[in-house]
Image (cartoon, rainbow, N blue to C red; front, side, top):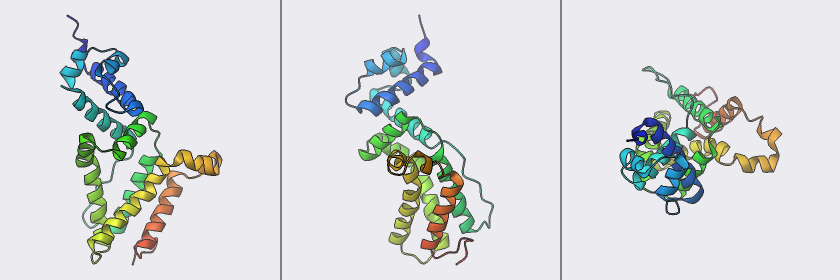
Length: 210
C-alpha cells in the first residue's frame, strides 16, 4: 500500500496547494479534490493530516501569515531597557519583516482573511498578532503611563498602520511614484522615518527623551 499520504512532504504539498487555491478563489469555491490534484496527493492525505477541509484552510492561513511575517526576531530586552529603545527596536523588526520578499499567494490569502475573518483569523490573532499587539501597547504604556487607554490603543494602530502601508500598498505606491523612487525606501530609511514620526506623536525627541 502506498503510504505517501502520511509523509510530511505530502502535508507540505497540500498546504502550499491549498494556500494558492484559497487565495485565488476563497474557501467556498475550492474543493478538496482540486487541492489534492494540485498537490499530487489523495483525499486520505487531507483526512490524515488535517481531518477536514476547515482545518486545512486554517493551517493554510496560518502558513500564509508566517510566510508574510518571516524575518528578524524580536530582541530579548534585559531588565532596565529604556522603553524608547524597545519601541525603536520594535519598529525596526516590523519594518524589516514588511520589507522581506513574500509569496503573493500568502499575502493575498491573508488580505482575504483579514477582510472577512473566519475561525482561521481567530487562531492567527490569538497565536501571533495579539501577543505582538500587547507587547507594543505595553511599550507605549511605559512611555506614557498617564494616557487613557483609548489614546494608547489609537497610538498602537497608528504605529502599525505606518509600517503595514509599506507592504500592503507597495504596488499602488509604485504606480503613483514609480519603482525607482519606491526602491529608495529601504528598511533603514523607513525605520528612521516611522520612529521619528512616532516619537514626535508621543512627545519624545528622536533620542527617546521627553
